[in-house]
Image 1: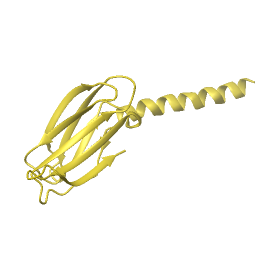
Image 2: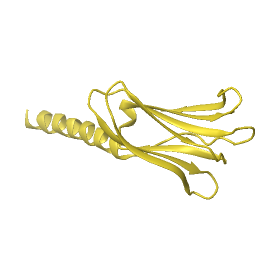
Image 3: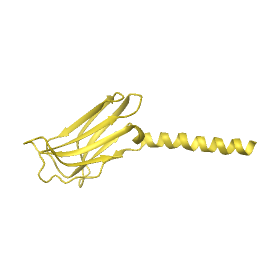
Image 4: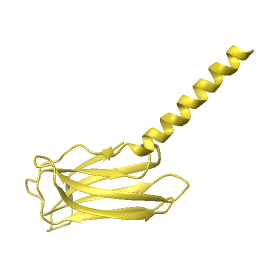
Length: 123
């Protein structure tokens, strides 16, 4: 019986620590080229049941510099959008929310019709 209890506690501990680690890991989209785009946008949706303090960064793919950033408390079922009007090859990085509780999209947009000409999501 003690062996079973120790194994069960180890499995539960690994599951809990894995969930905490997911919350600490940034969510990163694939990078997109800026060819033909007038702006880029990154959107995070809180698919969880609790508010989350998220930071959204639009990061230059080659230089590694943050082009645009914002931190907001995102309520459950709500989203937050960050836009950069100086598009360069870049990607979106979101911290402060678990990948299990978030949906992130990164879009290259044309000003003419505000249409996404390139879109990636994560996870």
